[in-house]
Image 1 (tube, helix red, strand yellow):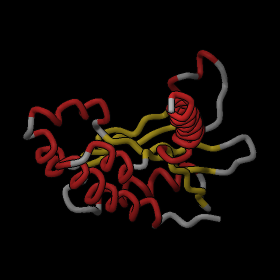
Image 2 (cartoon, rainbow, N blue to C red):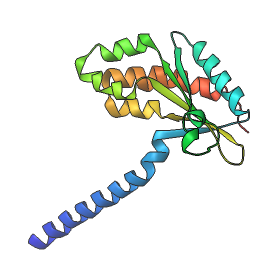
Image 3 (cartoon, one colour):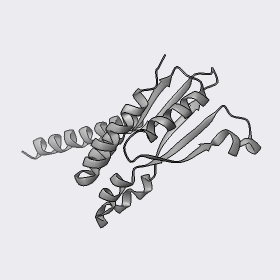
Image 4 (cartoon, one colour):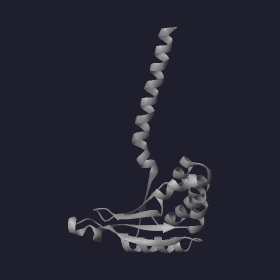
Length: 160
């Protein structure tokens, strides 16, 4: 009896460790989505900014140029991000005190970067998965509504 309990406990422990290792290595690819752009860096930034503005209540707050802001520390390819917000969605999430911790993810951002070979990519958090992890209003707003809006904007950029 004791031997079976030890084997069972050992099996559960090994299973938990294996699951932890799998999650550790797969989460980055699940949480950050990448989309190839067929367009130049500048055209991609412009198209994303316009696409966001064309969605109901979405606003582009800032366009960040990391190549420029880091130039005194070394040369890098074109890298930037667009900070975006939907005040209607934000007000729904932030109405409840228990949801206010997600301000760490606000405003939302879309990354744009060019690799050494000249290929341009768009990167974003997987807002749908992130929302599901929190549940409740955050899942409804960030996971469904915001996630869908931003997926549509990113999908409108042709890939090669």
